[in-house]
Length: 297
Length: 265
Ligand SMILES: Nc1ncnc2c1ncn2[C@@H]1O[C@H](COP(=O)(O)OP(=O)(O)OP(=O)(O)O)[C@@H](O)[C@H]1O
Ligand SMILES: [Mg+2]
Image (cartoon, rainbow over all chains, first blue to last red; front, side, top):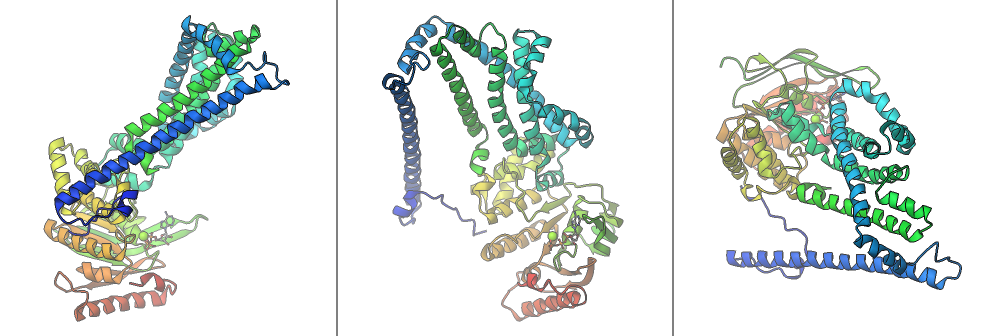
C-alpha cells in the first residue's frame, strides 16, 4: 500500500518555506514549526477580529453620544446619550434591581426553550420516522404553526394567569415550531446511503436512530435550535410586556410608564446582549462538541 | 455448504415510473456466484446493475423470482453482505477509525478489541496514520479505502461494490484495484463488482457478466482465465479486453445504440 499521500492543508508556510524533507528529524522539526506558525496565524486573526468588533462598538457609542449633544433637532429626553444611560445603569446594577430582572427573564427563557427543545426534537424525530404519525399530525401542526405566536399572548394569560406559567408556556410554544420543523426536515432528508450503510453493518432501529439519524440530522436540528433561541427572546418580551412583576421587558414597561427613556434603553441593550451572547455561546458549544460539523459545512 | 453462495433465480424487478408505467429494470435474470469468486458486472447505463446489487444487499425485494443467499431467501440487509457505495457513505461525524468500528460495535465487540481490529483493518488499506481523521479531511481515494475497510472488518461473505472507484482519478484507481485484489486473496471473500470500465473488469475479475438494457438482462457470462497479478501491457490482457468489448457491442447493437460513449475505458 503506497499511495496514501498526506495532503498538507493550505498555509502560507508551505509555499514560502519548503525544506527538503529528507531525514525524519527534519520532518518533525518542520511539522512543529508549521503547526506553530499555523496557530500563530489563527491567534492573530482572532485578535484582529476582536479588535475590530470593539472598534465597531466604540464607533456606535460615539455616534450615539454625539447626536443628542450636537443635533438641535434631537430631544435629549427622548434619546439620552450613552453617558446618561450609563449613569442610570450603575446604581440600578448595584442595587440588585437589574441582576434580579435579568435572572427572572433568563429563567423563563431557559425553561421555555428547554421544554421546546425536548418536545420539538422528539416530535420532529417521531413525525419524520413514522409515516402514520406524520400524516395524522400534519394538518394540526402546520395549522398551529401558521398562527403567529404573539397572537396567543392574551389567551395564554387567561389560561395560565400572569404568573410564571404563562410566560414559560409562551416561550416554549413559540420556539417549539422552528425546532420541530427543522428536526423533521433534517431527519427526513438523511441520505439513503447512511441508512443503508448502517443496515448493512447490522445496526438495529435504535442504534440507527441514535448513532446515524440523529447525528446526520444534527446540522438541521442545530439550525432550528438557533432559530428557537431568537424566537424565545421575542416571546419572552411579549409575555413580560403583557403583565409581569419582574424581568427585563417588565423593567422597560415601567420605564415607559415613568417616561424614563434611559431605563427603556438599558432594557434594549440588555436584550440585544442576551441574544448576542446566547448565539455566540451556542456556536462555540457546537464547535466544541461537534468538530466535524463546523468544518464540514 | 451445498449450492452457490449467491443465487438469482429468474429475477425480475419492475419499478413504477413517475407516470405509473412499468420500468423493467431486470427481466428474468438468473445468476450464480460461488463462494470466493470475483465477479464483475458490466453493461450500458440503465441495464439494472445497481438494481442487482440492491436486491442482493436486501434494500429491495424482487418483483418476481427469488434471490437466495447461502440457499436461503433474503430478508433485508445484514452484515454477511458488505456494501461499498460509489458515493461517499462514510459517516461524516465519525473518524475513520470510528467508521470502521461501527459494524463491530453493532456486534457488541468490546471497545479495546474493536479498536485493535479497526486499526488492523485500516492498516491493511494503508491508512493507519489517518485513523483519527474525519472523512472530510481525507481525499476521495482515502475515503474509499476506509469504506472498503469498514465493509471488510465485519468479515462478510460477499462484498458488493457499485462502481466504487468511479469517482477517483486514474492513478489512485489503479492502486485501489491492486489493494482490492490483495484483500480479496487474503480474506477469501466473494466480490460482486459493478463497473463501466472494461479495463477494470479485465484487471480484476475471474468472471465478467455482460448485461444489456431495455429490459435489463444478462447477455454473456465470460470467464477471464489470466493469472494474478495481471499485466495490462500483455497480449493476453489485450485479447480479453477485446473479447469483452465485442460482447458489449453485440449486446447493445440490438437494443440501445446511445450508450457507446459511456464505455470508453
Ligand atoms: N427507484 C426507481 N424508480 C423508477 N425507476 C428506477 C428506479 N431505480 C432505477 N430505475 C430504472 O431502472 C433501470 C435500471 O436502473 P439501475 O440503476 O439498476 O441501472 P444501472 O445499470 O445501475 O445504471 P448506471 O450504470 O447508470 O448506474 C433504469 O432504467 C432506471 O431508470
Ligand atoms: Mg448504477
